[in-house]
Amino acid sequence: AHGWANLGDHAITLATRALMMRAFPDRPSYVFTRQQLAANWGAFRASVRGSDVLAIPGGGNMGDLYPHEEQARLAVVSAFPNNRIISFPQSTLFESKDAILESAAVYHGHRNLTMMFRDHTSHDFARRYLHDDPIAVPDIVFSSAFPYPFQTATGETAVIQRDDAEKLDASSALFFRVRSQRATREMSTIAEPATFLSPSDAGARVYALVDALRASGGLVTDRL
Image (cartoon, rainbow, N blue to C red; front, side, top):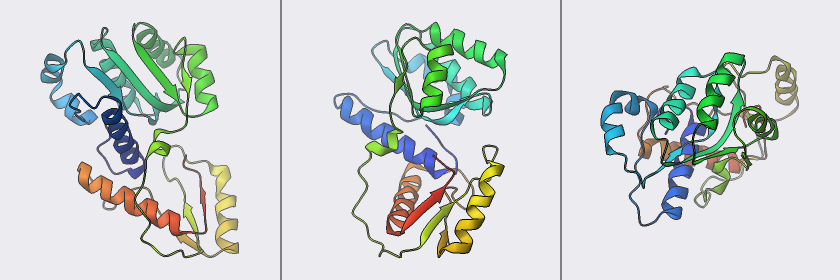
């Protein structure tokens, strides 16, 4: 699961857990962040039974741009070769050939691993390097049923622009043009202050952001 301030990641975690609870209603469901896994790795390994299904959340962190996330994923897949593991819809961001080979060896070596990808570029890449039968599906957040809207429609165009390593310099002109030609409302998927969020806090913030976006007259963003 995701534990930090990106509300998009938290939306993915919430949607993943809801889907798992619908798919396996007779089984208890537990959520662990990468930080919790690292701190309690021995206990986690000892607690997993052979019949347990392990779910790895989706997002845009498969690859060497976010190496800690990829190494955590590889550790789980390597540690449980006999469990069913489901890797929910991801985007791939590999730059190093060595990183591709390392990940490919682990993923191809698992006997019961399902891997899903949320964009065609990543799906094609995975089919070429990472998995024999990857599945192309939309981001899992699209499976979420969000509450009835509370905010009144504003007609303003919502603007959400990246400010991290995935920011595209070529998009700056587009955002400048939008802001100069429309009534806009600046929004962010990063919780402020940027801190660790509990599941309940994250859920409330995700729903509030979705409600604000739904009230807008349009959205311009370089986030997925």
